[in-house]
Amino acid sequence: MDFLWSPWRYTYVSSAGGDDRCVFCLRESKDEDRLILHRARWNFVIMNLYPYTSGHLMVAPYAHVGSLESLDSDQMSEMMTLTRHSVGILGRVYHPEGFNLGMNLGACAGAGVRDHIHFHVVPRWCGDVNFMTSTGETRVLPEDLHSTYQKLKPLFV
Image (cartoon, rainbow, N blue to C red; front, side, top):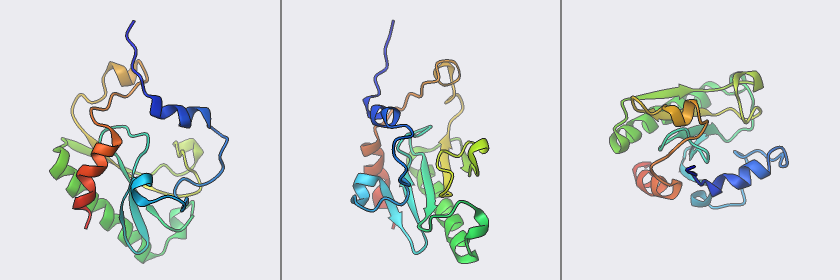
């Protein structure tokens, strides 16, 4: 039997439900420690700690809100501008064949963080969902998060 080791997930798995702090509102760490790639006026770009694919980013407002209606037009406009900018950077760095973009609003829609909206930017390649993901419920990423951060950080200006 083969084993795939993902020790970085232990903290997440062992603390499920144990921490009620919002992952987008934590302020005690440096941007690199939190994988924040860019800060704008109302939103920031952050890498997903548990990505679906290499380069999986999220755009989140600083405001702790759980609905789109809670953001004003400037905040929403900036969120979309940062999403477009993220797609451009990921396209240049990773050359994906497509992207999944979107939000999961509410627990029944799959929102892991229900009370702080965030927009996912997920690069996709034909065949990136194979038996490991669909049957084994395991994702295999070819690059560690720190390497991804180092590639992307200089491009968010």
